[in-house]
Length: 313
Ligand SMILES: [Zn+2]
Image (cartoon, rainbow, N blue to C red; front, side):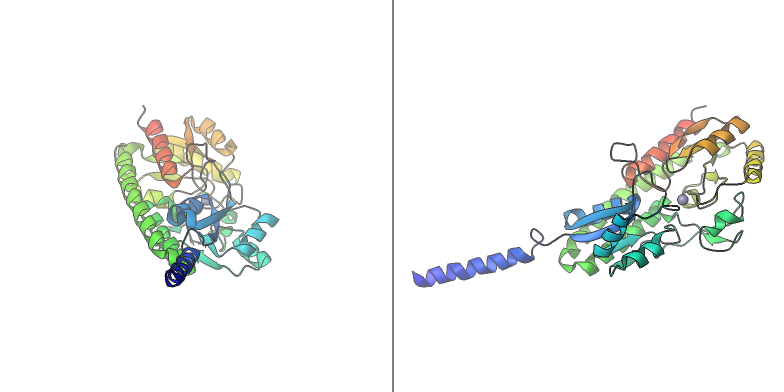
């Protein structure tokens, strides 16, 4: 009797300690994501093993974002910080310094082949915001606009989570594999949608150059007066130059971006007579009740906008 009681007790101790180390009782990994696209990827990889704080929220502009004291607190308490890199987050170094965070800062664009950007319309100031001298060729930071690159981000997130929480590694890898498969299907949809647009109509205008990787991957040409950052207003000369080129090249549609003021786009639309085609999600997702609250929905929204404006007439 006593012996079996001891055996039962020993067994329950083993069971308890097994529980204590299982995912059900482990504290979630504290993850900070610099912006909404990365937060969405991290949620898909981390599931309920991670607790995500997003710095630049829905419809926010990471190029010009000013961090808050709450951001510094989140950074200081983080286990892992996920960022885009390629100078996308203009605020990043300041925030890392102020928060004195000890977290690993993981650059998700690592492994991506950067696309060089040479300002065409935007003046020297716009290029300076991307971290180098005016007018020089710089790397385009919007690598996440190519779905092939999004898969690289996913792998980097899974590796970072595995390094920080080895007990969850199998689950992170399985989640990343499942989501990567969805991205593969999405890639097919985007490619098909763009190929359905006649080549003569594949020139569009946006306010800033956020779609260089999309252009490179899927074959739609984007013209933008504002360069790869939004941190300076284009000059009147830049806008006039773009208006002239639009008249020559016959851009087929012009789009507002969710992160920028539509005023400039409305001005170009009125000067060129091109109708505004709708809203593209460029550097941020929408709020949860909007049309682009996930990366996959963002891509769906954008191809619907292209199709609606370019196939309609
Ligand atoms: Zn941008």
